[in-house]
Structures are given as C-alpha cells and as structure tokens.
View 1 (cartoon, rainbow, N blue to C red):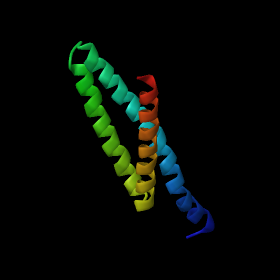
View 2 (cartoon, helix red, strand yellow):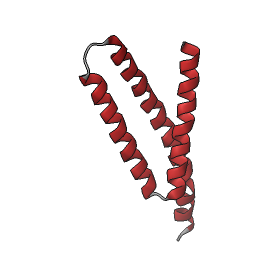
View 3 (spheres, rainbow, N blue to C red):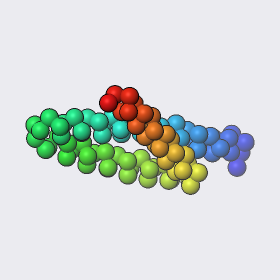
View 4 (spheres, helix red, strand yellow):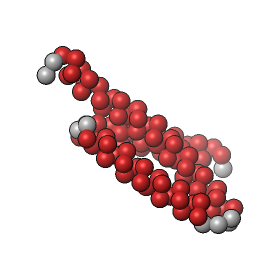
Length: 95
C-alpha cells in the first residue's frame, strides 16, 4: 500500500464519523417532522412515508459505512449517536 493510500484509509473513520453526525442531524430533523405531522392529525401517509424513508436511509448509510471497514462503521454510528444527543438536548430546551 502506498503512503497516500494508507493515509486515505486512516482518514476514512474520521470522515465516516463526521458523515454519521450530519446524517444523524438530518435523521432526527425528520423524526421531529414526523412527530409534528402525527400531532396535526392530517393523515398518516406523510408520517408513514417519512418513517419508511428514514429507516431505509439509515440502513443504506450504515451499509455503505460498513464497506469501508469496522472502524468506519463504528465511527459513523458514534457520529449518529452524537447527533442524537444534540437532538435530545435541543428538544429538551424547546419543551
């Protein structure tokens, strides 16, 4: 493995963690939107669509992260969990 290739591989978990955080922020924004739609009681198609889309996107995201190795998968998941903590803190302030 060349020096440039090994440095790229070493940076993959860092990039995956950042991607996991960004994905998590978007994911939990969609969770919030789903809750708003359910509370409005204006139909179930929107909330169901958002939920199925979120689950599919999370599955796809983590599957792609796994292709880069176990450390990338764990970093992506930890980034996602960090975004969850941020979303919960924001929701706690809002209520």
